[in-house]
Length: 505
Image (cartoon, rainbow, N blue to C red; front, top):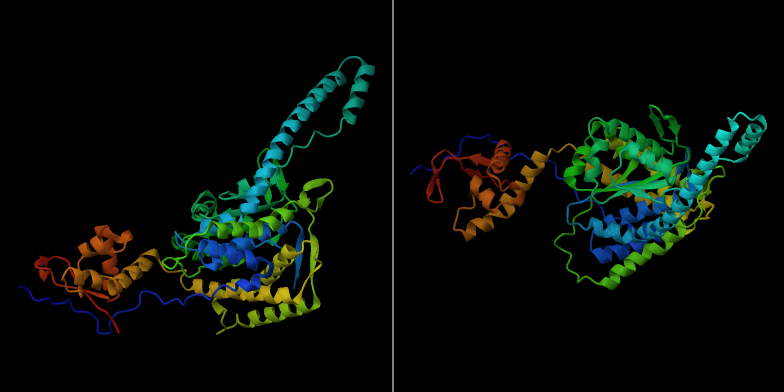
């Protein structure tokens, strides 16, 4: 019988696969002010992390108010539009939060769609009558009788413009290309939301493939900045869409978020820094409260009334151009502006060498503006006619902006971790925490492991022999495992491939 002899290995012992990332701070729900009650209700109803409910509420509130005012910042005025990115596993009830928060929006869209169908029917008839009259007059104007031609030409000039087609009432899109978004602006509302509880479809779709990523990132960044998007097409000429606004919330799983967080195009263009990003601690395994329909109903009602009330208000648009917004100016009070400047100074100094935000400069440099935008959303949600942001609201907005900066710093440290290393770390934890229980039940030595053990008992994602062997090899490279000599007896049989587990300190 062969005696188990590990292949020689380096004396320094196991090496970490990745840096231990600290858990994120609790979401400061109270700082959401007029949104906090709704967020707490949604969190109670779904038992999802509070940050998921908060992201949904903040982004939907932004969609509701962004048409009405631009908020003062330290460098002028910015849209009250926010882009949110929520990273959470499947099963965290992302869709449940979104459904409750957006129930009022969906109700409003349904009502508007019914009116739109009637308006389209009336417009279709009016347009056909207008076209028929124009064609008849054109024919008469080109006739041989001068007096009749002159009269027809006069009637043509008096006809006025073609009847305007009713605007599409659609307020949201989930997976558009930038061209599709521009097309929706052309036929529909000047204030839109890009919302998806399966944001991986957008990030992995046509809009963000290698050919279109630069164009999509640049187009969405312009919309966040409040700049007009352009459309240039052969035959149509160039169109510049002034007075448009976009709010955004993408919910994505970690495997879909990692490539975006490490994408040099998204980072280099400042696209990621335009997002309020969070990856909350999972609640899976601890959601033990009995579901209560009354709690869910109350959560839906918590935002719906106010949301429908704001969406029903006439948008400030150009008198002759109903698709061009003319948002008013929402000023900062003297105290709010002073506090925002102090925050700007603090985040600016923290970007220097050795500072807390040295490695997330793009996020830190936009954080003061993010605070102003959040303050604008909270102010207008409470009072759509408010004239200024108060000191109290700005203090809350800065607390929220600091939370998001902390998340950006924390998540930046995981951005470059490859999926292979992440999976190897998952397997390492399973070997240390769960494998001993399986081995003891089988009367096995828990210090050794075979590829077939991972396939039969390991995490579900690793239950294929090629994948199990590949990840075990990664752990060998990092000295968490040591390969035993071929022929070593494990579980009563000679094994061609077996490993000894190193548990470290």
